[in-house]
Image 1 (cartoon, rainbow, N blue to C red):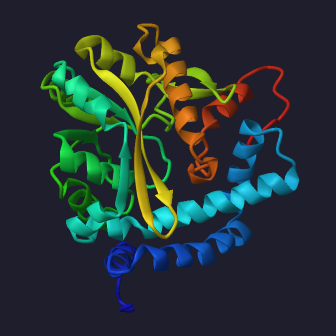
Image 2: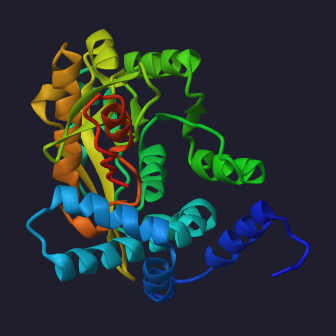
Length: 304
């Protein structure tokens, strides 16, 4: 690697190199790096273990640690596979999508004159899901530039290369999503990131409240769109399977809390395909902790 590269350019350079690697080799590298992340990255390890302790309280210490190691291995694989999803020849990426389950849900919605909202949680490799969706349907998704500015053109080009339309995470972007749905197209929404205060409600996620965005019911009420959950499940070293699952019926409720509850239940159903492939290192319950700190009886409890 050239020594004069900045951090952003170095990451882009690495993805370009990895784009030429076979998936078997990438998975072997992830299997080597993942345990190192677990051992030496205290933040990633502790947050993963804390989340798993909330979600799967029945797991004992060794079982929880094993699942955390598996999860961080998959998260490492996702990061290493970005070069493949964004830069490898399109025919090669398509060839590694070994099966697509539930495509009929998208096709039938469009035949009925309805758009499709795809809830895409951080499971498996969501960039492979974006590749497939934008290859087969008119597809629009929100996009927020990364903190490392030099990576913006790399990420944007990778996500747009098969025809996806990226729109900003602001009212103008929401308007673009509405227009796409009214044209009976597909749009993607991240259902498992905490929104800014005022843009969400508290709703249960694995039986514990999590602050959840309320964009979905606004889109559904104005467009009659069908909602599905979409994931690209990793088959380690072999490729991916795309799964489209019917969303929980509560997502169609006009009540924001009920709709958000349905969104979280839909994410839970996707995670059940393989809990190790979910990105548990994200602080999903951060705002719950912030709310608890405001209470007069707060006893310095922290999830993270």
